[in-house]
Length: 131
Image (cartoon, rainbow, N blue to C red; front, side, top):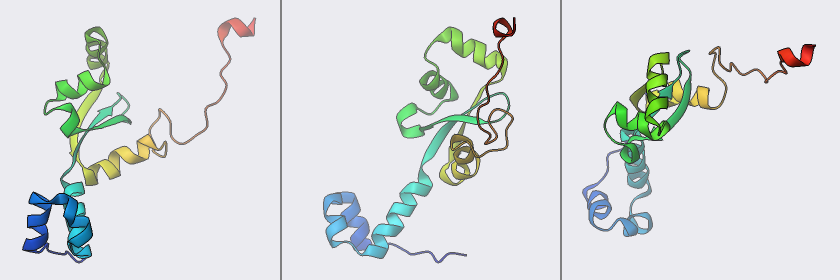
């Protein structure tokens, strides 16, 4: 298990009242620990297609607290939101660690979902081209 570093009171105070000073005067271990705390506390909205593949991600602090807020962020038109809801699209609020496990592989096209399981896009014969 990784060793955890506690942040000293002086560095906490600098981060609260004089954040611009923290990088120059703060203890490197304290600065790294506070950065890790901030990153672990981040929440993300993920957009999940009906096959279960994550197709989008947004930082929750910019979107809002409700799933409807996230859906509006990804799909502005009401008609399109209703259609997507009927098709099975979902939006979930997750933490950073879960984002790395669930969303990152899909967004990097390295997941195992049927929508794009890491394979190259292939040419498809269109019906009108076959004649």
